[in-house]
Image 1 (cartoon, helix red, strand yellow):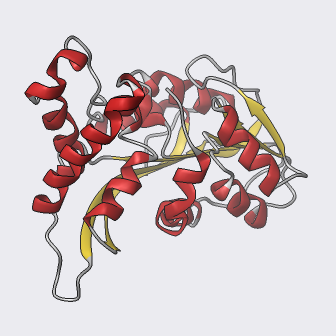
Image 2 (tube, helix red, strand yellow):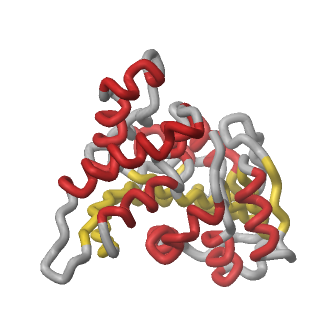
Length: 266
């Protein structure tokens, strides 16, 4: 699946706000390296660098375009290309930070357990994931793909992400090595210029698998059909703007200081 850094940063303020909210709940770190997992164009990496300047920082992403944009933005930070599904985390990390990436990995809780095990005592795993598959922006992607005009192209393909597990699953799976686990949901209400702005938003993320599956000459047709549905689902408010509801799941788990002990979540 391809990504576009330029498309992603069209809504950088809105995309970065959850990263700020996540980082605000990260406690002070022990000595050791910090990692921004799925760093994208480094908007979240920049926040981590400002908050924890004394911890060596590395950004990890699987997409060359995102990494190119990240290196231009923060030329003095180290960035690496890697698939988080198979990436082996180094032991003794002070922070694993992941803003809107693990929702793409079906077995991401296994990865989160590996990350938790690799933390230094007192280190933190901080994760944010969109939890919005029930929202119209996602339901209408699949509904459009099932229309007669596109059904043959998408036949036999599964594009929707798997729903996130229940919050208690994360707590149960991460508790063995955690001194504290916080899990919460936040629903953001983004005021965007128009329904077309919503389409532009998801062109940088959720729509990518659908668009990549289509021949280039058919993408505009699909986008037009999807945009028509979005205009009906998100009518303009009195001042002409539209309101995009966007729920997200947050997890902050801090490794117990005594690595031999096992503590229940606070």
